[in-house]
Length: 401
Image 1 (cartoon, helix red, strand yellow):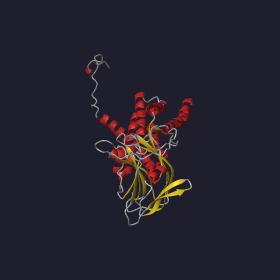
Image 2 (cartoon, rainbow, N blue to C red):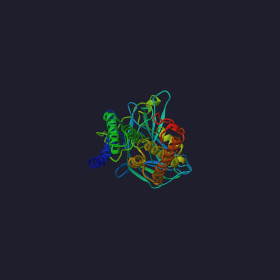
Image 3 (cartoon, helix red, strand yellow):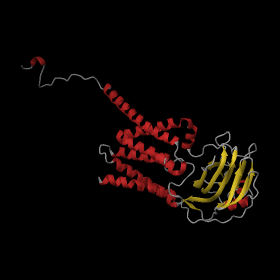
Image 4 (tube, rainbow, N blue to C red):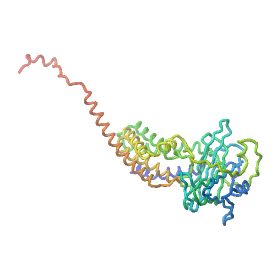
């Protein structure tokens, strides 16, 4: 009983550890300055048609109106940095009014961070920060983006591609950040704690050998890291607890001379053009790429994934333990997605339904496979042969009555 309560009480502590580690994952660079609305306005005081700087009750506001029948409004701000960045943290208050989406799904009001590399091959990443339509409002957006190729120069891109309506940016702060040193070793400590927790839970079933318990605990932790936390997400949101980046520095940056394509990003220069980015391909690792490619088969893919996990857990620790292991993984994936700010909608509800279906199908398949395996072993047994008479018994005709 004591062991059971200890496991129950330690689970919230492990989840809290995830949230705290996420909040302290990044720290502000001491030699870099934050960029806010004042720097953006200084970089581009004269905006193109449809865009304007206005003075609101809390400071400067950037409004960008759609131009029906006219080219899209596209504004680019080069973020001043002295060297390629590992990551950048964005705080944003963003809203729209009567914003009607265009013919394409992606034709709305949106903000991106475009990463340029200083390598010869000129690698480019485009990370979506936020998008709005209708009368949406997104205040207090906080996220970190980082280039997939290591380090790069960030460029802020603001576009209104809607058929009509306007979008407003009431506040923005862009802060260069890096991973804290503690993150690199504390994450492995947390992994070891989660492994120990699952191993301890499975230790309550003495019929399961310890190598199988260790394999099941390892499988859950690996799947949780790939699909839940830190997960495959290309934008890194805080998990329940806001980011703590250390002391804030907000000092106006003086423009620098432009000498090369890479050096251009060191100048807080604004550019207004009609070259909208258009449809942005899915960013992130192979998991996000696969999800994008198989978007129409998402529910089938999700169900198949849960079936496979249930089968593996069932083989290792039995169907009873596999039920709560696979179910816990499904809940962890959806819970992390909601906690990281991706929301919970009907599609996510269907993911939970598919998870339940996948666990059930996994049971049935495991039972069928076990039955087929047992039948195959029985059919493969050699035919029984009559036992040879013992020497003591003698020949049948010599036995005494």
